[in-house]
Every structure is written in C-alpha cells, then in structure tokens.
Length: 316
Length: 257
Image 1 (cartoon, chains in turn blue, green):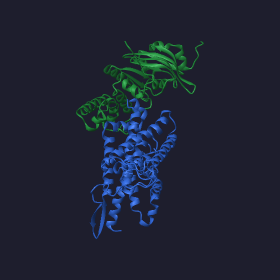
Image 2: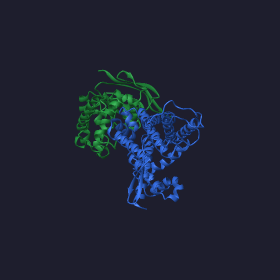
Image 3: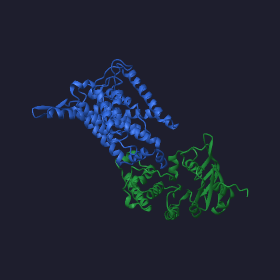
Image 4: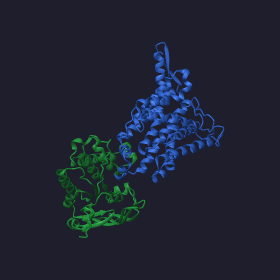
C-alpha cells in the first residue's frame, strides 16, 4: 500500500473510468431528450471497435463471412479511430430510424422502445458475428506506431508505469468530454437541445425541428459509443461480438449511479466505477464485473436519485 | 382588411368525443379576436390544432393564404404562429435571455459549419439576436433579471417572459391562452394595455382565450363563443353578450321564458 501503488491504481482507474464516462454520456444524451434507455448503444460500441480495427489493420480475421478479405489500405490509428467513430454515429442514426422513430410517431409507450432497441442490438451483434466471426480480435502491439509502450516514473523506491494506451484513453476521453460540454453549453444547437430536453413539445412550437435534433443526438451518441468501444478494444482486445453488450450493462450502472440524465453524473459515475475496479484487491479481481453493481446498490441506499441526480427537473 | 387565419369546418374527435366540431371563422389582420366559452369547450384543443400539435379529424386551417392543416408544429411556428400556454411552459433550467433566444436560433439560417467555426455571418447574426432578445426582455420588464434562471421568476414575470419568448418568433399571429389567469385587477388592466401595445408595435393579429369577460369585451372587436366544441355565437362583444345561447351556456338556464 505504498504511494506508488496508490498512484498506479489511480492512473489505471482514471483512464478506464474516463472511457466509461464517454460511453455513459451516449446513454445520457438519448435519455435526456427521449426519456428512454437505448439498449443498442452497447452494440454500436462493439461496431465502432470492429470498424476501427478493420480500418487500421486492414484484415477481417479467420472465421466470419469476410474471413481472408483484406482492405487495399490501412489507415493510421488516429484516422481509423475518427472514421470508425463517424460510421458509428451513422449506425446510431440508423438505430433511431429503425427502433425509435416508428414508435415515437405513433406515440407508443416508452417501454416498447426499450424492447425494440434491445432487438436492434441483437440484430447488430449477430450481423457483426456473421461478418467478423466470433473469435477474439486484438489490435497489434505496434498499433500506435513507434511510441514506446509505457513510460516509467520513479516514486520513492518503486516505479509507476504510464502505458501509452492509457494516456491515449484518457486524452481522447477528456477531449470528447470537453467538446460535448462546450457544444451543449455554448452553442446555439446545444441550447436548442437543452430546450428540447426540457420540453420537446414546447421546443417544436418555437420552430425547433425535433426530428432533426433527435437524429443529431443519436449521431453524437453513436460517435461516443463507437469511440469508447475502440478505446476499450485497443486496451483490452475485442473479446467477440458480445463484448460491447457486457460493457453496455456495466455502463447502465454508471449512469444510474451518477444520476440518470445528468451529464456531470455520468462523468462522475464513470470515474467512480473505473477507480473502484482499479483499487479492487488482486485476489478479488475475478469479481471485477460485479463491482459496478455492488457500488450501485450501496449508493442507491443512500442517494436513491444517484450521486448527482435531481429529482426530475434538470436534464442535459 | 386581409384574412390572416381562416378556419373551415374544423373538427376534432377524441375517441368518439367531439372536442371541436365543424368550427368555422376568420380572423383579420390586426384584430384582437376573443375566444370564450366554459371550461372544456374546446378552446385549447383549437389552439393545439392551429399550431399543429393536434391533427384535426376533419376541416382545414388557412394561415396567410396557405393550407397548414398537415404542417408540423415547427414549420407553422416558423411561418409566424406563436403561442403561450394556460399553464406556463418556460424552459426553467435556462436563463431568461436564453429562453427568448431559443426561437430566434431556431429560425436563423447559419449552417452547422458556420455555427461551430464562428464565421463572420454567424457572429453578426448572433449579435443581432442577442440585442433583439435583450430588447424583448426589457419590453416585458425583465431587463434586470435577464441572466436569472426562468424557473426562479415569480408568477407574473413568468407569464410576461412567455409572451416575450413568443414574440421572439417574430410572429404574424399570437395565440394567448388565458394570459390573465391568476392576475389581480390592476395586473389585468396593465395586461390589456400591453396586448394592445404589442399588437400595434409588431403588427400582430391576436387570438385571445380568456375567461375574464370584461377584459375580452374591452379588448376585442369580435368574439367567438364555444360550448361543447361548437361555435354558438360570433360577432361584436355586445351582440354576443346578449345572445340567448351564450347566456344559456354560461348560466345554464334554458330560455323558455
């Protein structure tokens, strides 16, 4: 329990936690304007990781429909990450058109959209499995080019390792968070989005085209999902087409823990769960997946509305 | 005087119940047109149909000579139809000024690119929007509360802010749904003066739902009376007041005397 041990775990926790936060914000945005959890978000996360993998590595693996196919090009990782995220954003738009809009137009119960988004998630995951196979994909170790895999810092007698991947995770996540907050707080469209989150009907009577903004929100949410999928994938590998679904479930704990619909809540929730996992004693590490939910139940006992949740009013 | 709004055989049935049936009337440019009737007469349903929130079962609405019956609420709003609500609906989490800016931004035509990268055009538009928003906020007497959150305002100020926000759409027609609800006599008198003032200043046509009969009689030159979704009288305030059907609707007496 030395200082180096503490710093190492803090670093590990913050870097993974910041990705959880970005992923969680994708749920939060959609929840803010539609009041619905988009269960397809985990599938978009998977899709983003696979797309970036293919764009950066140029190969489709050994088992799927596209086995043996190679792309005529390989993008540098940063570009593959961007293109993968943009394509994930389009997948988010497709999810809205398939799972949400038809139900919204006939004014159906929000519960139905839950079921239809779960359906879209399963279709998407199966489609990924069909194309890419069920095997585990790992980004090659030199995916970040010539950067050294880690830097060591001496703390007292010991060393703290900053893995380059961790720095990328944290840097990209932080950048996304700042961009998102700037967009929502300081741009016109961000203001319109806040107005819509508060009351879509009133917003539409003031000339805001609600459908366009819903699509835009799903695009941003998809970008956040695809990006975080890639970041987790480059760090821990792509453990089959279902890996996004389990991260998706964990991240549901993040948003409920932080306060449903609250942006600061999603960020805080992500960091708290990232840190809790990092500080879990090594002999309990096989229970890592349960940490998020154990923490969730403890928090809900004390603060039923989540750490930064409001009782109903404030969103986005 | 040109007809700004023409409602023709407008009907709305909610699962068999006729909320509005075969309603026809015309509103002329510059008029303050009163809509009165007991609770549940269909007045707010009519406003919802005019603004596109509720699709009529039958009939048409012509706004500035265009059939808007199938248009979306956002499209109708952009054409220049603005409204306030019986139960005030502000964006409570946003500042007073931002509430007024929302409809202005919805109307401006800066591209996403221009908005994000702050082109000269988008910055100029934003400056103009800010200036106009401050003007409107000042017009309703909230200049010193411009940065306060809308949710923190007292009741009367919230009513006025909602009107300022509606004016930010640069409307041709303003629909006011019981704007005097919860106001005392002095406030009601002030409100009447204010409605006249904005009508003249912004070249508005006003549709006014109001229970306060003296206020309607003072403000409006034509009045329509609804009861159970049907138009039972229409005309100048004095005529309408003397109409037996209206007296019956309001007092519940049959006129077999």
